[in-house]
Image 1 (cartoon, one colour):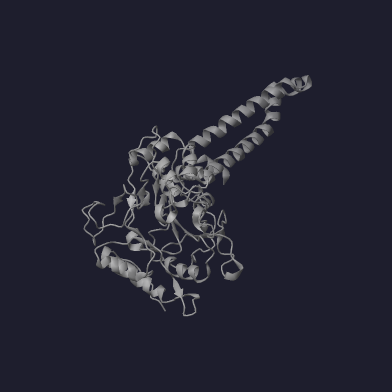
Image 2 (cartoon, one colour):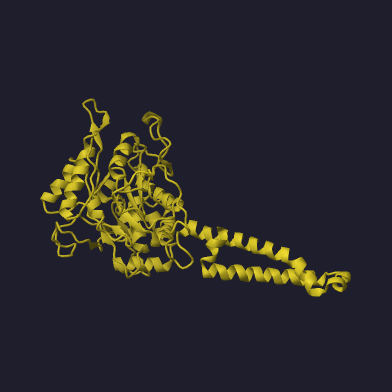
Length: 447
């Protein structure tokens, strides 16, 4: 099988035979020079050489093949692309690692729009329990490949799902007691995104969202999976039969976009009064200071791509970053390597999730490709359920995704409890959304 896989690539075939040929030549020269005179007299020079070099030649062919195979699959595992930059989705070229939650192959599935996409569901806190149960109950009908990732489980949250989540606890500790360093658990959650993409390189795209973000699947079905998705201020709206936006973000029918850094780094650092008023730009621990040091290490071609959006040349001292919610974004598999390279630079510092991730995305987008605008809403007031979406619809807007969505609420004693009624309600919402989009869309009847 190894040989067959290699022989399907002309570049590999040539490399193998050149390497083996050189090995044969070297072996022949060595043995020819060391043949005994009796061998030459008895069997002739040619026959003696062939007899002695054939075993060495075959061995060198096998060794060359194995070495090449190892290096070839190392490229795949690190970048998800072949030598020419093409995404490797063929299972023969890139075998996907098994996921903890995989659909039963014996049960037919009706929906296949996201069969080649990995949905990465992250938890900033280990609040798995019914959050994971309810989430999976709804979205596994549409996303067969789901990776749940988060910090190690807390004892007070019990045993449920302690073996079902890919554990990544990188800087996931939380301490909100110091006003000068408001240490949120999710400040470095982009490490989970990097981990998920690193460990699972064989998908045509990666959709990233936390467990408490509602996904309007009939809307996301309309998005081109070969492009980046984000609520970018330079994004291109995705056509929507339910909303007449004239193809523009500026006509007042879309969710607020992410933010361009509003002032120079020097000014924001000097005048920062706290994240509540000035957001995270000037925070001395996770703000622009560490982000700028990360930016300095990124290749110039990626800096130029960011400058093409912001209008602030890389040569100036007034470089501007992009900041905003990182609760929904999509990375096409063909751009995985570039995005991870840039995100990795930011992860070498403490640059905040909501600066590092959107900035890395804008640096990874090729000049000739649009970012598709996600109507993503970030809310902190009730209703934190499907009712919010219906209210936005009534007001003439669309909701592709929103955070914060709650799968439950506090009971009369102040203890959080999951609410199973959210499952049929979200399913009904998806049905209503499909009707707005004028598409056929399967919705399971809740028992």
